Image 1 (cartoon, helix red, strand yellow):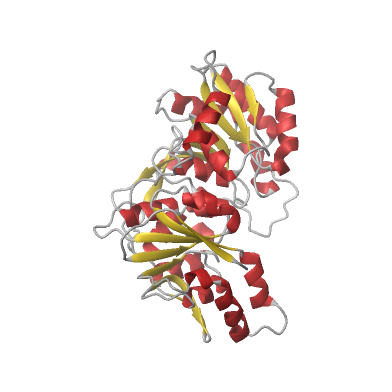
Image 2 (image 1 turned 180 degrees about the vertical axis):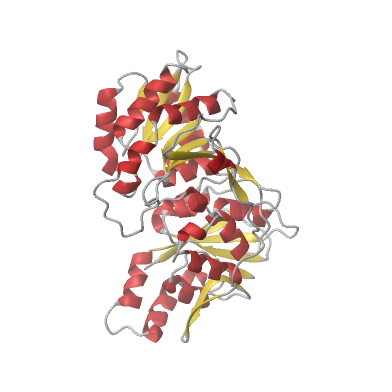
Length: 414
């Protein structure tokens, strides 16, 4: 593992370090935490430790002063390899985190939640660690909210608190009641603005679509996306922008074969920083529970998302006010993480015309609820009086959904 640093802004101490070495979507869900920290009376200088492929994206987060990058897989080898004791692992990692050697942090916030990141947090000079910490005696949670996070992993059905709010509480920060903001490269944003909208179609609504997901069980069918776009185009003048990585090229080809007009296919053609510039130019984003949807939320672009498989909106709905989420209503939902379901019939429970209706309602500032359906639920993200994000039912005449239990977020079981 090598760690590199890029200083692009100087601020006044105290200094905090956020350790977020997980995936793209997890980094985007860190944005509200940074917003809350920067709103404090004594605003800290915030540094970020992230995976190398995410460091450029990390620099775009408003409030980040310095980004360090660490190749997580390399240092995992030292902790899991044969014959590597914790002492040997620590000596190896100490030499690798040289850029952090001269830093002194008031607070290290470890929200990677792994054994390795817990030990890593102990090797960084700080006055306080929030999250998971570790030493030669083992790994431990530093507060009740970190304990809560690990307890709900055993039974996620009991959790009703968004992961972002859990992280905010782990860090000891007030809930911001809004998402933060990214700063896309102005030159790239202008380039994609010109690419996506000419003078001829300047009045069209730009709709970003991601057809894929990180698991087949989380992925809605291309045919359902096609039916959704046909519903939309019958009611709104729209252009669709396909986004995603190179693994989703076949999905894009299938989509374009069924919907030939007003499409820009950028699948596999953008870096993550360019993806931010693309989505920032769009009016809305549609997809599964993906990093791109969380990126859209961080850009304050409205989203409509379909949660399938292991994904639960109670855990990871896009953060902010007014996002729309759908999920199946079946006893087997959500799948367990190790599921190999061969007959994911729940995917057909989410009706394309209802997703299309939710999209057109958002585009037209129409806050009407979706009509009742038996096999799915639809929610709108909102903030409760206590500041926690909640899911407000968006289906009409569904007494099961309207009787949402009130949650006392202040009572976290030890």
